[in-house]
Image (cartoon, rainbow, N blue to C red):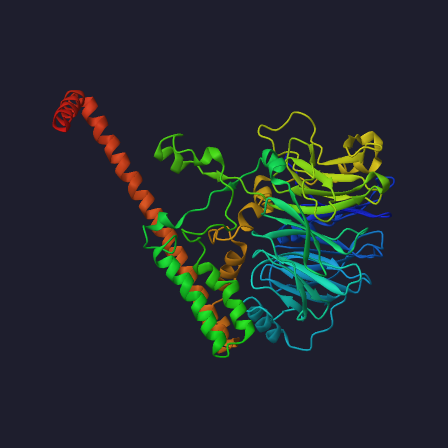
Length: 586
């Protein structure tokens, strides 16, 4: 039976935590003993966990007394780990699906970013709400349709105009560094996020990973869809160095993204794709937004329009765009000479996309300081020396595993623990899968080498005591490589998490029943989203209808040829027709 690949590993001096699917396990890092696990809960609790979906984000407070998890169910759950058995202390509803979660150093505040571009803070223990249950339900409906209204009384720290991909608090917790899908890195005060201290500008594609080395807290390392990692002085916004990593990473990216549909497939100039009406609508959207601001439209309204509906109206790139977050095309997928037209349209096309997933660092003293990172869908882990200011041509080293690296973490002693999608290979390997691999530094060299399970009791326990069975449907819901489709901009609504989640929430609201508790502005916004959703569904239905007509016509043509062949008339007539046509052409 297949198993969930591990997706998160937290390593501290006195605790280890591994996430697999909708379960997490707490182990003793020295002996490898399994101390606590959600997999040991009663059947009814296990069923609730299964329905809540995979854990997407996890954090442990500094005292290791509490664990917080979030997932696709938009629930912020706080667990107590000080007792012999895990206990769910509280859970709260989040306004949107989360992208990152973190504890403050005192462990009393939880900071959460979401796909709508907001960052909220929540107290460890929620304050009692004074409103009635009906008012809470109304607030929950509003929270799914607006940006800043929060069903759990979260405190808004800041907001971006596009999907917020990740964030981190600086070591002194005076600032919060956030990144989004629109190439921005913003340094804001914390918790007064409305005070923007600095922007670190220079990325040309989405930013998906941020890291501040503990040994050099004035430095920020960032990565995303650009072919290089960037090193910043984050307080001044100065770019210190760029490391070109893509040529090294590219050969190891084995998981490809489905090629997005272009606007031309909807009709030449008639749809919302390249050129024609699509560009006009995109231009109109910007004009409306600018005119609205000039007439006193408040910042929240303009931000919400740009963050969901107007982005959905212009999901395809302009035909004359010079660059963007478009996937990097795979040479095989672009070769027009491979296969016939019908075969290529039937088989899903794939493109190569580079997405930096996680960045970390190691200080090896006199042996150097290193940056370690992985890429979504790549079968290797990568590391390079942390460059000094002005130096960019740093060699990038690799450790290859043969299967995709889903995540990694650096232990307290500098060892690197890699989490693998060990059952990804097709056909599956006959050997027992190793989901966690340990890399140690090779003496005074800059090389990482792999350790065996006999060298670490924790490694052996992670690969034997923390396996969670998964069905094909479970693995599909996990969607381990969704960033390959969701991070690049200008993708289909089907693959865009911001548009998809916003429209699905709008579809779940009934105007006749749920609309009674909404304001006129909220009703107008909801109607606009429902109209957009209907338009997208209509276009999808038209595409399916055109495809069915083409298939029917092709089948009719094959039937005519088959009839002629069986009657014995086809060969002679066909040859005669070809001959006559050839004569006429001459």
